[in-house]
Image (cartoon, rainbow, N blue to C red):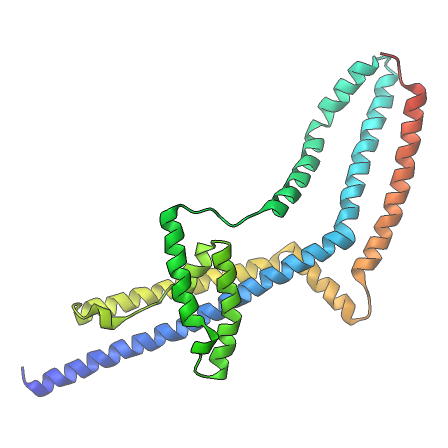
Length: 275
């Protein structure tokens, strides 16, 4: 084969690899943007959930607890009419509402677990891998490494995310941001075909991650909490405080339910059978 032909082939192969590398870089930026979008959405939903729980959710929980207690006293009064002993009545009430009580205990336990939640404890080998991955990403995305304003803005968005992922030992986020990392200089012994296949594999992985991230975005936006968040924000634009209105209504319902429960308790005290 003539040397001119070899030069032409080599140039063609180099251009092909360059095109693949450029495509990989574009896909990586899209993965970075989508990752930021996903995490921002999750944070927004978490903040709204906290706001909702503090304004409204606690009243729903209180209503459910009052309703359960009222059901228990209604059953006590019903069993009392059958001349059943107080001890047997309590046994039946406990058995009847055992699952309902367990659900409330589960809610309380979940709250305590969230307060005590710590980062994932990984085995030493995995922890070392996460640490090395974090260092690699922190070096790559440090704002000082940015060459222009847009890139710096991207790095400033990604670094807090990377730091949090490392703190939480969130391997998924770290690996997603590292997918597509390619250094052909280190693959000098590979043939052009092997290099090309390696790059194509990176592209396939990036496309898969992008698909997963888009699905995650759609899932979050389709969620009940996000939909409610949108309703509240739209109401605020029209000058309406939806959460405060809902909370005020729930307060009235709680007050009314407590009054009914007190009446049931007083009736039970009068009619309670002796053991």
